[in-house]
Length: 233
Ligand code: URA
Image (tube, rainbow, N blue to C red; front, side, top):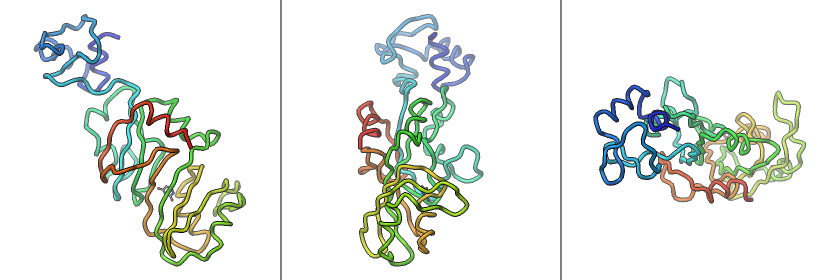
């Protein structure tokens, strides 16, 4: 791909803007030699204003989503995309969140510009396990684990029962729930079906990829081994 197009696709501006950057000598190699639009150089050696280029397409990252931000592009309030560098929101191919977390759910949220990867993660056929920790308004009854594991729990206004899910009790009002589906408000509706109410909800892992110590509101890119962890159980 021509350098102008490659750099424009990374969100550095229109092709016209990037042509201007070349003309102004702001695009160089690692030794500071000015590059021209037709040059063929390794990706890693390209600099814009002395800074290495953003990661190439094939970008996947994880965020520790805070409360109060929406997984949407056009919500009038704060959206998860506002937490990424502005350039990441005008890349082509576009970087999208992998599924969604509710505004009032925190925790592990993935983003990728790889459409095939995105579909593989959310595909019901692949059954990637998502683990959530919930605090509840009322004490657990004691029969929730059995009900969630049964594969016969039908959520309100749905016709297909939920796939079996695993409940781990962490305290009287504190539980960890592992699910393989991604239905609308699934975890909240599962506890609602037992007469309870989720007060706080956090996603802590997707497959074998855990949130770890990533601070709330922060994000980092994933390498290939970490992407592979999503599909390891
Ligand atoms: N289940 C929910 O209820 N909310 C989320 O954000 C994710 C899973």
